[in-house]
Image 1 (cartoon, rainbow, N blue to C red):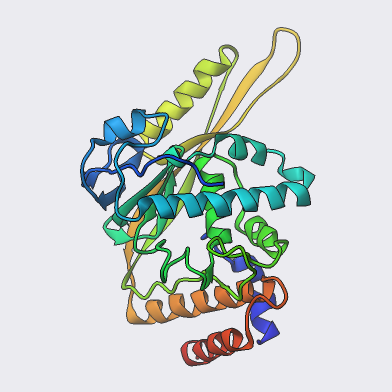
Image 2: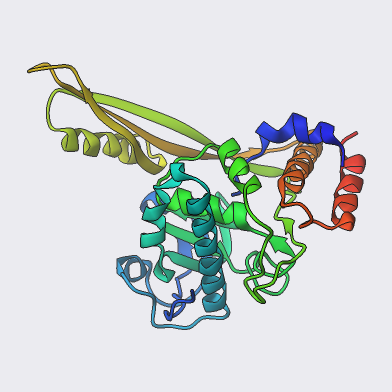
Length: 312
């Protein structure tokens, strides 16, 4: 494996990234409203309003959704336990451990943003998983791939915790040898690293809103979120910071809210090749960071061959 790729692209890595006796929730076809406005999917039965108003799992069992959700949760809890033991700086993860339930994991078909197919998305405390991508036979929950970086990204996004891409990658590098959720044994699984060979891509752009007031911090927070969601029509609006400064009667409150816009971009042939090369180099970084011995020699050789063919 060429060390040049590892050094050059370490900070260019992009974010991907106990069984519960609750049943799979079936979701209707269509485009979801409010902050889900960019998201579309296909499924059946039960209205979205009823799904999102539930505190427990749905009553309907759906084709493989239960198994996907339960294995997703098993890996999630193992992952959170390992991170919590490894770093005191991740105490916020207790919030995820306490709040993570089967009810917030929604398995759907043909998951898309702006009509471009995606593997997963976290929106408003829910995690949408594309069934085909996360299946347990040859997908992300099989014994061929290591999905932990993607799972951790989805968990932190769904609970509004902010981690930079390089932080996510560094945390992935601290993990132990991957254990199969199916057999409980250590396996030679490669990090999940999809190649998006498409003439389109989704650009996710963050936008920050800052407002101040001398009174009513909660009202200030609500007003800033309102600007983000209704005026600017951004997705995934969240409060990054609420603080106050000053002294005596001159106290001023400041709130910082962040939201995201999604834009579909057409790629030229040249751009597609560049995107593919960058994806492969990102994969190289993750392969280098995986626990020693987890990736077989053939896994490294296969990736090297793809890089040599694509990155001219």
